[in-house]
Length: 242
Length: 267
Image 1 (cartoon, rainbow over the protein chains, first blue to last red):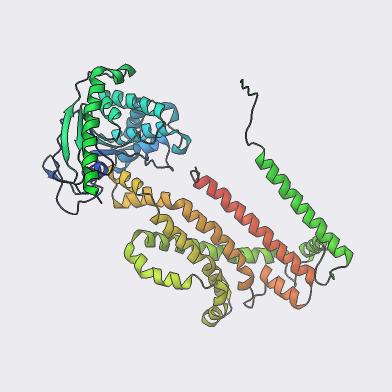
Image 2: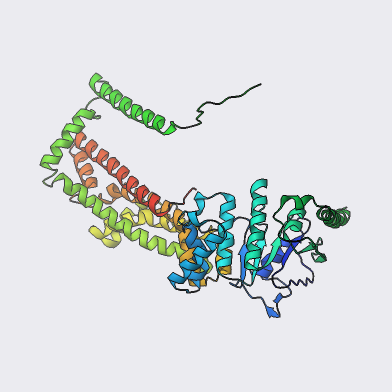
């Protein structure tokens, strides 16, 4: 159970917004509500003035646990959304090939998910969501279960894909470093009831492929600021508990 | 300190080791069995030796049993089992899918299943005779009963345990209810459905003897019962062993199909 206060979240087209916050603050609940997976017991969710009543292909989702279809090949996984929407087979295959190439998995198109490593599985999941051409890509801690090295590579990959496709991305993580490295904007959530404490702009130039950026003064400074903001929330919560 | 590894292998020959121990165990068992029968510790009226059984098997193959060729006995038993079992698969998977998918169906059917499940199919033998008489229909319905509930339950569990994330992923990709069922729920439940089918087949085959107690004139069950009435012990052994071997073959067949169809299982 998580309670979310009035949250008004706006993200401009083509930007990369990341939500960070203390664990248990409702980050994932917020994403699930935006995705339309859970209906709020009270209140309503509006996206561009339209009320959210369920999941839909205009909001692509990437999960921490990949959520790939094990009985389908990599290519068929990527085609899934197009197939559901009745796109003819040839068009589907062409689209799938395009996104296979984008995530660098052309050689693996006929493999099954269980034959791939965690990083590769997540590439498939990203390609699957993008092939459907959503307005926004929702990502719920997508790299949390990857090892540190793979995680860094995937972050760089994601930025490259984002720059290539120009998609709007809403990203959830508990890693402050990941948030700063990826985003144009970082939103910090408060503890119960969860609402947005503040949103910060990350004024670091793209492309950020270079590893050195993670040690740049501006980067480290932002890390401290956000770290402090989250610590404040945790401290408040601990005082309430006593 | 220096470490050096040279052509190190971990694990490996486990499979051949398992096979070797298995083969040794079987051979030892047969030797012991022969020794016991030869020593006269147990009368041959109760325990036939493996060699006698092989000879008798050969005899049955040539002369048949009770005026009916041996392969007909085997064929009739297989026919009854496979027909009853196939009907159980169709009915069990359909009902199981409904139970797993429609909660109202689950609520309505669950108390009946909970009650029926602990009753062994063999307990229905007298009732089935009472209801349907002693014809083929009775035998096939008993075999059907033996696996139907098991297949139903496994299918229902398979549907219910589909990961929520898969359903969410599919709906965010634009899948409607019907598509969700066809393209996500059914394939995701398939490994569990196959477990039901595999064990169900063994249950059905195991019941063929009991089903053929019902005034049968042919079949392996009939042969075993008839031979025991006339104290033809070796024929009883041949029948029992044939049932065991065919059961193994059926299982191996289903496992082979399962590996092909649900290739992702356990990976």
